[in-house]
Image: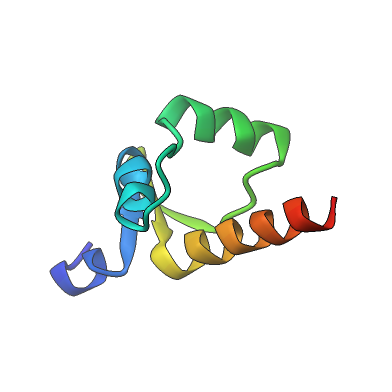
Length: 74
């Protein structure tokens, strides 16, 4: 992955820190994300480089916003 592309993506191990930088206190650990992916509750597109999954920052933000909207509607 090129340096410029690295600015657009967050590795699965960095999702918690990314969420924290957005002001979300409780981010997800890697294992939690993997479980949610297997259960179909974390439907964020990703690319794979080797064994590591990378998510676009904008896709993670969209997923978080959709989750907050769903909570408001419940």
